[in-house]
Image (cartoon, rainbow, N blue to C red; front, side, top):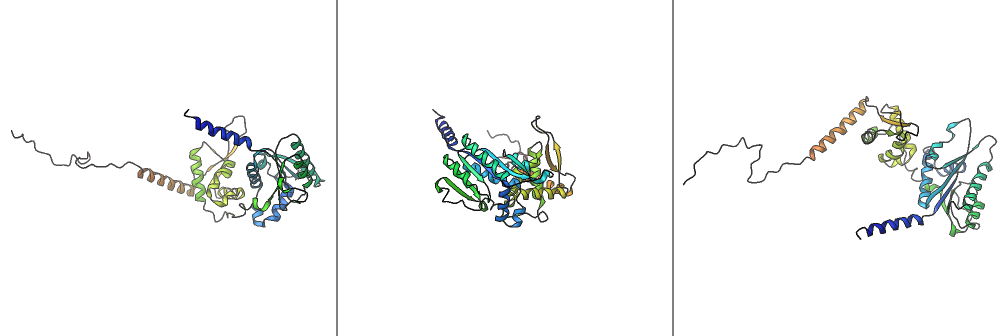
Length: 321
């Protein structure tokens, strides 16, 4: 059978997916932010936003198996909407559980996390539990989960007590190591070459009916270099482009008519700098297309049609009989 090899690859792929365990992730954001501030220098901490934290935790979960239940717990001031970027978590299918800061105690976050994590274990929702808990001690919860044969990964600044948590079924992930990539480089909006962003957005506009702001920042701008693995850097440079009237944001109808309109971005085509960069891109494109044209090759003993009329006429001589 000709397709036997393909079916075997498909079977191996399905078996590999089945072998990946389900993963539950529970995040104590208040403790996590304190740990990040303690673990990293002040400049790096200022450049790390909720999107970066969420993306990093998602990568840990995906490396461990199939994320099935993900929840972030935090305290908030109800008078301020910018206390936490809800969309940074919800857009990644992470459930948010908030507690009013007025009259807040640490147990207001600890107890819901502990109850939800243990309830999920009892209901069999996950086989691996990732506790992103910062400095807070969740040793008792981890021990109870391990009694139910669940593998526990603890993300913190401090390793758990090995006398109470056996090493064979509990792993410790240093918090500093997760955010080391984000702390390597920052980008200064005043020193950035915005011609790169203009070319990148011009290319995106040519490929799609519209370019979503969130899509461009999260999924496209990383091509600008290592510093743009940090979402905060991407947002900073995008805002810099807006401040310089190179990019504008507008509302656009969603591709799915059932969903609300989205924020899209496009180049300000009246900007002299944008016009200059686009003209340069188009000149290079025309030049490369001209270089790719096929070249006419003359073969020996043949006369090209281009010079045929310029050749001297051959006299009409009767053949010798």
